[in-house]
Each structure stands twice: as structure tokens, then as C-alpha cells.
Length: 66
Image (cartoon, rainbow, N blue to C red; front, top):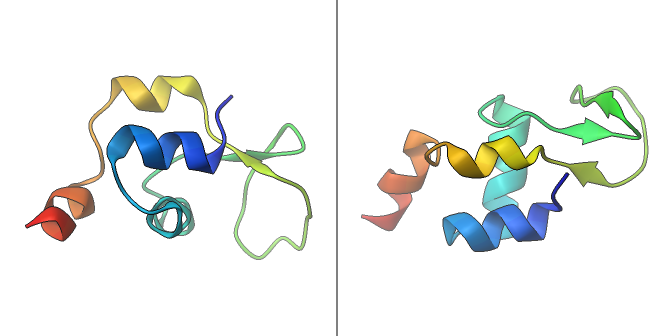
């Protein structure tokens, strides 16, 4: 499992962009070992599966770079 910062570095975007992708459902995330659901009120660090690095960045990434 990766930190938001690690995913942001891999895709060369700001960590806020990774959080936005998570909230929009573009990236899967886990909190305390459970799938993350926006607005569930849970606290703790978000983690992203390493398999995300094997995929391409969400289409929004290419739009931001342009």
C-alpha cells in the first residue's frame, strides 16, 4: 500500500490532485484496512494499492499537464 505522496510523485502531480482523484472515484483507496468511502467520517491515513502504479493516470492528469 502506498501513501498519497508516493502516488503523486509517481504521476508527477500535486498530492491534492491524488486526493481529488480518490474523492471522484478515479483511484481506489483504503483507510484502516477498509475501502475508503468519502463522507464516512472515519479517520486515519489513506493508502492506495500498488497496482495503481501499473495503470495510467486518470485522464484528468493529461488535461492538467496540457
